Image (cartoon, rainbow, N blue to C red; front, side):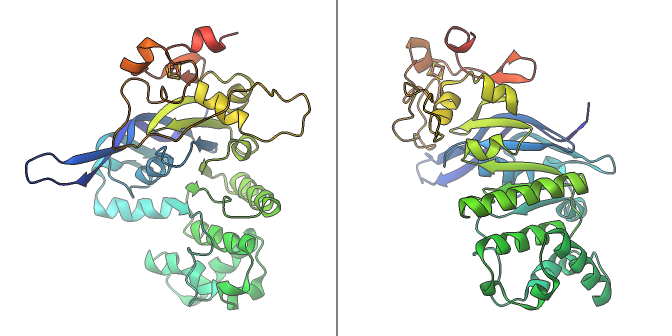
Length: 331
Ligand code: SF4
């Protein structure tokens, strides 16, 4: 079995969002006690609605959000870093090894830079290449891997479609030679036909370069076709994690079930009685007591309002946090 590249243990990310002179500050736990293990060479999916904490978890793994409690370890066999105690020199090296692909390919690219300069920038900022020839060679290699035409390198971003811009963003993320990529809603802003194209490119790159991906998405159907393992988040908590086929064949949390119900289907036999997700996700500044999903859960009962369920092993690598999963979904 492959070793974990990234191990997250009991991670909590807290932000102070209000300050009072009488000593009553307001805090927001964007991520609460989350533990995941991302195996080297895998495509790991993180799913949830807006406000679930998935982007913050991804950013904490990149050391772009504070680690308030718990730990994040990175080990690619060559180097090993504890991100809560990483030095400035180690962080500089970690930035080459762990990169982010942004959601919005329009906002992520400077309109004043050519595609060549956009892709080359990380090489120059991180001091990876020493000469212009070396930089150009590396930029051309990565552009071809990302299926960009070499004559595109002289143009500016406004000349490209959304899908081409996202390929430029991907090339920029890959140029430093990372082992680990966080792709945060990287296809959400694209048309459906282009989404498939970009997803196929990411999968091909992962296989060819042996990379590891954390793929963050609100769309369970996209994750189903891409990822090996999936973690579902709700209001800063992990509520279910499992290998993708296990999660899809036998979901064990009412929230995951509801997310499945929201996937459109052309199948006339699709379960029309399926559970629908109603209401809004509560505010993370004032989360409900007990199970955080109880305000929207059709199966909530007494204990759900008072006691927060722990993430427990349901079956092998399948974990779930619900007081009632055995009686509801253990058929
Ligand atoms: Fe629903 Fe209760 Fe399970 Fe929470 S613990 S998901 S409220 S049944």
